[in-house]
Image (cartoon, rainbow, N blue to C red; front, side, top):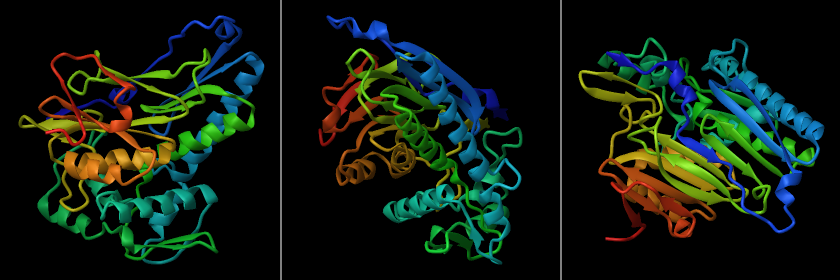
Length: 354
């Protein structure tokens, strides 16, 4: 069995191309770059701030990182005493009072559970633990253990008492896993910190969950490179131009292991208990909220192209790039002029085209 090393998490599926245009007043030359990097939430987190005051930029970036550290401490299952772990320990027994941050993420997770008809489910924890994908213990579960874990997956059994700030898992053995949405929330909160510090131009990158603050420092859009899903550590599939948006990708090439020539990736279908299987290789969401994009990229990946695009068309302000296994690239209409395909062996398709 071949297991992808944890170090693979350092290879992002999105690349930030910080290239400057030319303005007559040469305004871009007045900006300095402050970059801070730290390993948080199971991935490399990088914050780049562009400001005329280096000290101010440094303080803002450090405060943003501190907020991400706080969120990791609340929601990570790898940190003993985290609120997520305490909720899981109380499953079937007691409600747990949590912070506003954790409450908001769980509320959003349940919302997307409803929107997806259960394909996005924050109670997928028993399945995630059983498969162990992304760890050295990755394996195909025994059928009996898989069926037992499936019985514990049900986002509708998450009881939220808003007024009391409490969360209760109704059945013993249930486990929430906020990995499919917490990084997006952390990016959004880091952005709020930068804005409160007076920063107008920045990039926040949580292992490929990219959020851009404002326009680029020279007045143009940010150029975000989308990696080729068949060569995730190599060349780019294309570049999307965004301003004050987030770009988040989910794909079967991010974390996986291989056994007997078959790939088992980390995006699990809550109904089958197995990694999601359809024609999609990677799904990228572009919108204003990284929390939303995090959940939507997972949902679209599991739904497939047709259902995923139908969902996206019903949502305001959400764009997408879907890459299929036969190397077709579907883009929503709002990205027609903002996405440039760079690979000749891929075919660009518009949504609704035959």
